[in-house]
Image (cartoon, rainbow, N blue to C red; front, top):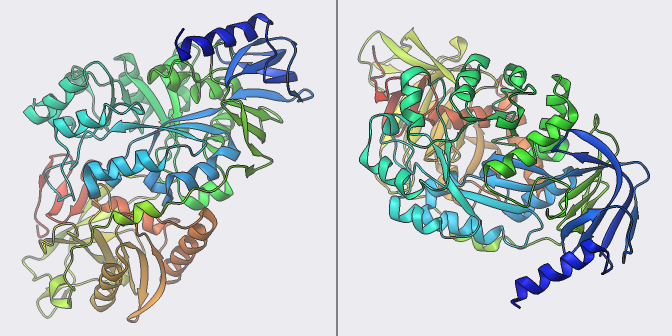
Length: 573
């Protein structure tokens, strides 16, 4: 027999009762995600797999005394880079909260470092106690209206797909490319026609949605309205109900989940700030919110375990049943979702809110640098007046969407300038990957900054350097600070650094611990709010001002983008 057959034979012996199991959970109430019931029974584990129910001879017995056993949580759509953490530190953060599996889209780091960035994420997420699967980035760059650090063609992503932890094609953001038959997009779709293909189609409906779905698209996580989600679900899509740190759609979409539809729905986070991880948790926070909104607790667990496992073809994950991997958490109650213990493949990995795994060195990621940028001067940010009115981006709290406002220009000596009293701030996106010197200039409202400047190398999706400010001199200082750091977040006032968070891995990720990252992140947020920023997460909001695949108006290094028409528009009207 092969080694695999030998292991299977022993597992079957343990299931029959002819071999002692490794671990027996006794006195439990087990969440059955197939029936929605709670069953009082023991659960037997052998060789990292669940082999049956009921008492039997065991090497170790865990008395759980009426506690609840649930399958570990699976986040079916996540951008790990949003945490600012390397994979090993992320694992240490989420395992105590019951997350045992994540399906990540690494297109953030791919937009900076290409295939090397994805390979780093695969390497850095090996043997960290948490299973991280990946989807091959479909749109690097996301559009032709920005300059990314790399390009991934069909050959590149097909090569990535050979890795056993790459499950399919990540969110297809270029929905116009699908709808209108862009040859490069069709090439990628063909290469993944037998695998899972995730969607990304905010607001798409009617015959254009029909055309998009004909490309083989299987899911959507961008629904913000119940009517939109119902149409997409009725047309065969799996709907990912998102409740992240920045985009929070669960309240609007919770009524979508019914007895008839729940098997087509998943709970996902999409993004998670490091401070939320530390203080609120990960998927447990999403499920608590779903329960508050009236979704049955056992249904919530199904939406974050069995459903994503089935959608992604992870056949032995997502349930507590014979033949399934022993990813199990011990809960004090279904309503509170308080996690006391977490087991991954039958091994205890977290207890009482603490990860039990050793730290893994993240040093290899520091080789991913991308900061080819000449020193910036004030004249580089000047905007000559070319009309009496301008297009301005309007930020909206708790969403990735923006609005377009047509406003009178604020003029000084023939130049368009910030006017903090009118909540009108100059913004620039500067290409940082190739040394081209290209920059897009515009204005934004809704950030509330009264003085100083904020700058960041986290600017979706191409992650060029983005800066916003009430004064050009402070904007210049902020840009040049990040140039020296190699990436990060910085707050400047009066020519001095108020706070900074270095991100040496691709300008996106820190090599520090979760606690240290949160400490520095809170300092930059606090400093920005002291300068007048009104949004709860000003840097996260700023990062999405450059995302040209979410309506309505965005700014890239190539200029203003009207996302709905998918074309550049002039600053002056």
